[in-house]
Length: 78
Image (cartoon, rainbow, N blue to C red; front, side, top):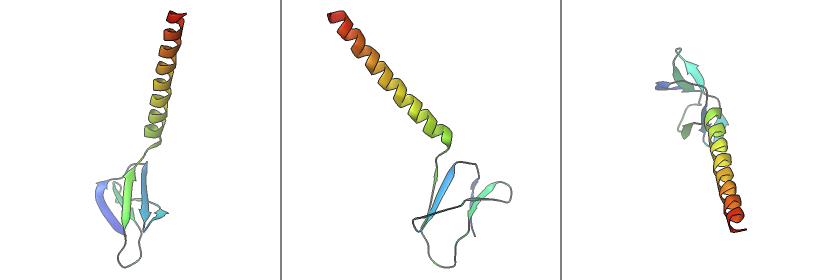
């Protein structure tokens, strides 16, 4: 097991040699992944659902503002 001395929190994703794997909570606070002996490429990134939801809501808001602006502009010229 490879243990990273960084805080475990739901939302972390990991791939080992390009294959999705599971991050485990180690010692009650740290992150760890189980790997076979040898050299591996481990990639971890933080992507909680709240960030994805926030991005989607932001995009919807920007599209809404643009639509309202276009509607108001057409209405003003009519």
